[in-house]
Image (cartoon, rainbow, N blue to C red; front, side):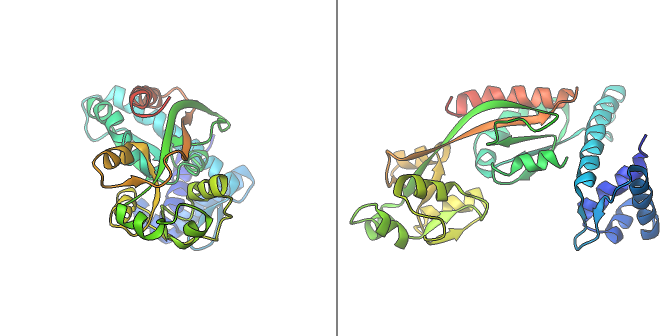
Length: 296
């Protein structure tokens, strides 16, 4: 059996990024933290951390972190059942989600569930093509992802698809696309993208206009709300999820640049295969809302 105090030390060292900060969180000396990590490494026979800045987990370290996170989830469920009226023992559910889902349908799907059970939600926001890595490393118990194939030890459930429309303001279109939407105009007009991880715009230009990555201009704005604001302010054109785009198209604040060219992004819910009611109930809530909000 692995010592829970040693596993917790590993978890805190990685989350805090170093031994000194972990020692402050655990209220022990830095030497004590190092000793716990050393004993855990001797137990498994492998190095668990890369002593860089910040400290990072090795592949085996990530496996142990995932194991420890699963134990914590099951123990929090048991504690909640034993001490149902004790508010000092809240269940924390960590979920990785993409920014567009968070800005539209995700929170309404879970609000009533979390209020009813008095759970605490901890969200990690990342690009939908990367959220499953957070599940794999144990940083989240479930994730909304574009990855259909279930990770080892996990289940994958289809939620629906988000459709993205390429939009801009009338003023921007008149300035940059007066002669049409083609390779020349797209290479000169600035686009708005979410982050360097966001490859959706690359795919859009590649599939529909045969434009290779790196040839076009872009603003990088890693906030779903500010990303949309930048487009509304006429800074650039961009791909906006249908749930956000359609009301703005209807009221005339935005216009589709090429309405016949859409990008469909399928979304899945992946979660650990452990008998925890949290992940089961979360999936039911997400599936019910996704059926109405997403395109099936």
